Image (cartoon, rainbow, N blue to C red):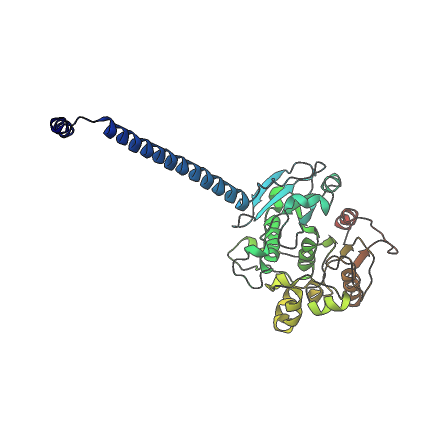
Length: 353
């Protein structure tokens, strides 16, 4: 027996496995393989879960692809598209050239969108491009910087308004090349674009005749303006008096809401005097046409206080007192001469004066 044990020990020392040792080794290796396989599977599963989580987060944060802005089918293809009038990406304008041997009048369209959105491709909402061209009137439609792109300008509404003025000067600089009568330019627009149009109509000429900038020498005055759903005032005190549930306008001056707008009214009065169309009216201003979708109710809350015809009633009263022609159209209005801005623009731009 002792010799057998000695042989067994000697065998183990020589590297020979007995059945018991072999069993223990196989069992240990099996456990290791199972543990390794489980660890590998866990890594794969965790990686898949992490990838799925990252994909889900990306889907949540990624903005949906924006559809490109396009004109309505009834709008002819522009003669020139995306013509640059300034340095910002949105400083572009489209131009439709009316067929004529003589310089043509022009309608200068400014889109709406609260100075926070919208595009030049909305032109047909504010004037009928095809009808204007058929009447021998050329057309432009422009983009401009939004308030959010004012880049530190104070007040931020200066960005869209001065872009509109600059675009108008650019168009006038192209008068010979584009066959335009630079005197007979009428503005059209809706909502904020309507307010911008009235600002141009009533503001003193921004031309700088001695400027080294060729464009800056051009006039910013208009022959007329025909606008839809215009905010005629950016004075919160007036707005609250005319329409108690007014809520629009504070953003033009970098303010968060109408309550702050009203509370800080006196401190921003110089801005109101410079940028509110109502405050700028003078007897040498061109005629204007205003159209709204609902009748007025002064001193009462409105379903749409931002585009109420209360704005139109008060501007018309003000213009008549000063001696500026102001036509006002809304459902039920009396003595309406022109049913649409387009009809007014054609008649007014073609008239002798």
